[in-house]
Image (cartoon, rainbow, N blue to C red):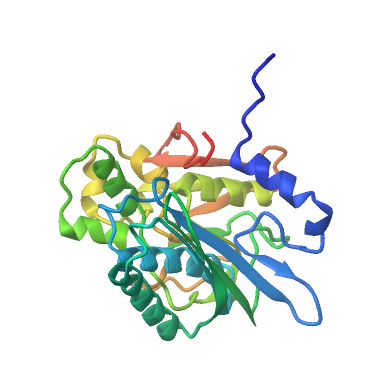
Length: 314
């Protein structure tokens, strides 16, 4: 018998989205979901799994808490919604269920919740052959900005908030057991957390960079039937030396987990200098495309991009 085809992550999500029990969620295929009732409730869930997202020699318990919080916070931030409550699920190996490990994880999580105004309202604990940490954020406040907008037009800006490249460059070294400097490790251990989305009234469509720069831009193009042009030299990188790497620009376009925000914005968006401000990195070159696409420009010339980002079931 022929071997059954392996589904991609996108194909699995499509099957879930077509379930009858999913149909009241009017926002599908986005960073967060919404349940529409007398008051909209927004939700997002993310996880860190030992052996998939990290190894214990790479991260301390506090680092795990920071990354877990940052991934969930980023999903809400890029949508313009502020979370207010969360559920925490911990599935731990027996070796991890020690007071010093769990207490260190919870201390960092408690600090982040307090700083950003969240309440932990429940969750679950279980024993597992591998450590599995999961958070679900819930929120009601804010003006939602989706991946799709009917107002996008030719000449709109492609903008970036935050830096890219630092986390993936560290992971590649760790996998190859190459030494990493402490200032490099911080990009992997403590992803950037922004407190607000600046000038959100000028943003038309947004996405965070969790799987890769390329995948984020490709999804923005597909959701809006648009042609986008990215000027690679304008990307804000975690470290200047990434431009000198032998695999540049492929290593940056494939970069994931920095949790930068990419958006399509109108041309009136203020662009002040600073790490907490948006930077223009491209533009919308066409709309109503039968086949959406992203053109990547380096030194004035289009280049062929590498494979499209992280895929769980590749």
